[in-house]
Image (cartoon, rainbow, N blue to C red; front, side, top):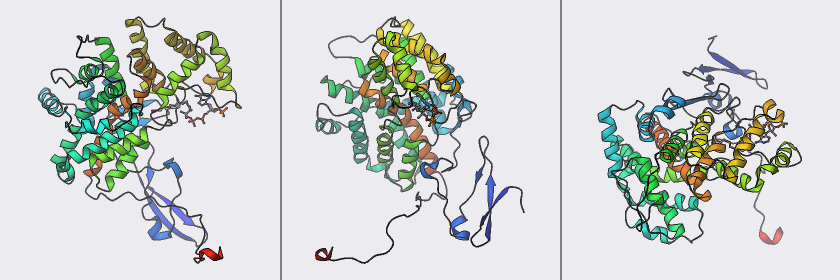
Length: 431
Ligand code: CMC
């Protein structure tokens, strides 16, 4: 019997199967159970994929116990300190940090595709003035597949690459246009002489009636936020993109599926919840009362932006974004504003409270990203759109990796059926 196997025995029949154990570079090894049904006529049962590796991947690695996050092997701390968001995009897409020439060409390709087809303006106009920006984002990105039927040859690596470039290039234009549409201001077209982040801020906040003043510190805080949210391995939205992609659907519609999944409050909506909570608290003098509520088992209110399903020690992204957040508030002279004062006091009190210390509940990335986005004047209902802009590269990188697999199969989970057993149709007058 090989050492690198797990023996699974069906005690009802005495039949056994040897399942190979496969080792990754980091992280837990996996049991390859693909022959289980063929040999034992059994499925595995793992709702919410809590212990199931759904794919092989070389893109992102997370160790929740040790608080490690690597993109293509590079620690997130090093990338956040030294890299730009576009360089991280290149790394996630192609696996290596770019040379100067490669970066220049990549940037050039992105710049060529920042414009939207003018026909899309009519699509925007179909939305109500109070539509949720995420509803618009899902719709517009899905609609975009209609403008690029040429990208349908997903077996062609050049077509795949073109789709990836188009999505990364157009997401800021799409997102900022949503904001402008909802506040009734004229659209601002991209300016390709600007870097990715400055272009975003320019399209989001400039107006034809006045000059727009860039703030380097604000831009860098946004850049760091985008880098930290660029990928997070097989989370719900990424798994959605992969599953949709496995049917060979158009890449833009796969990403629209990812955006729809991210919209949920259990996934991308937590940073918005942090700011709503801070508004509810209202003033730092009310914090002790709220802390009691967060700890009360009979009260469903939780301290939003604290705790994490995977990171049980600390969220490495939170350490980076915390510094960026504190620095930004100081630079913008906003630390004394009531909302931010409450946030900083809440952070201090919770970090010293035994309840949170014993349960290893630390601030997560959303605690600070919500505060940063508020400080940058991004409206609350646009927060998940910002997350979508950042995560688009993760979705397309994972999609490209999957489409490169030589034996790509359509994803098809199985089930444990608990419904009625076979029964015969009863005519309506006899029911
Ligand atoms: N406030 C108060 N108590 C908490 C909190 C919180 N935020 N989080 C966990 N707990 C308590 C929980 O009640 C439990 O206590 P006890 O052991 O006495 O029953 C203990 O801590 C363990 O909690 P859990 O629910 O088993 O932990 P989990 O891993 O299932 O939940 C979580 C993780 C993120 C859903 C949760 O911490 C939470 O709801 N946090 C607030 C929402 C939030 O900030 N979400 C964003 C997560 S980061 C998203 C990303 O990576 O993009």
